Amino acid sequence: MAMLGDTILYSFRRCPYAIRARMALAYSAINPVQLREVVLKEKPQAMLALSSKGTVPVLQLRTGEVLDESLDIMLWCLQKNDVKGWLPGDSETREACDALI
Image 1 (cartoon, rainbow, N blue to C red):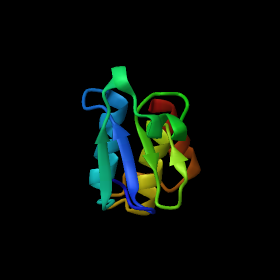
Image 2: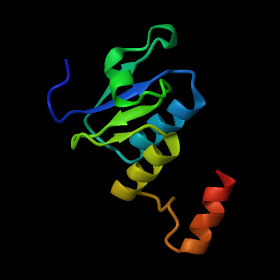
Image 3: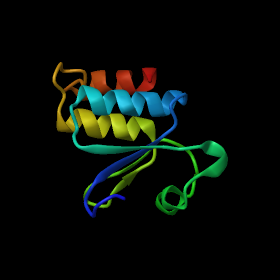
Image 4: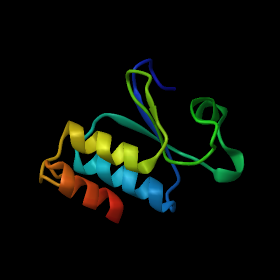
């Protein structure tokens, strides 16, 4: 059971969007994160209460904020700890990267 304030990631191991969210969390060394593997046929009510879209990934931050798009999760992670400078600093390069993604 999650304690109040835990960061929780609802994920599905074969979903490419969830994979890139997990990759960003690992790359940025965001810890601790509770990984909750979802069976897509039996979506947990707790996840649906956070995001009615019913898709993964869903990241619930310690603050209670919810990110339910993999790109948003990736950007949040990189803004917290971008150890190799993956996130471009200038807006023109950032826009080009966003278009590529």
